[in-house]
Image (cartoon, rainbow, N blue to C red):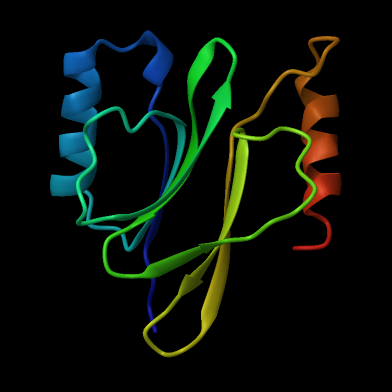
Length: 131
């Protein structure tokens, strides 16, 4: 079975409401991937019930986060020790052939000392049981 996946950092924090809506329209009308892994995404009033969505907000000053979105495939959140909630989400996708595909949407965060590399090492350590 073929499964198409797209990954997109939607750059939410710099975009206007109109630009975010245009991005959502492009994502849903022009990109026909089965699974969409999104970062810097916020679902604010643009999502309808046609989609299965796992979204986690980073919080604090960031009202956006990471998401996994499908249209016809069931999503189940995978719980793991997550040092960066909202920056990383993992999901099991139920494929039509009764197989499960585990996907991860990951946004690279800075750690408390402004190092991305250290934060990514922490994320990979958190994900080790899944990998």
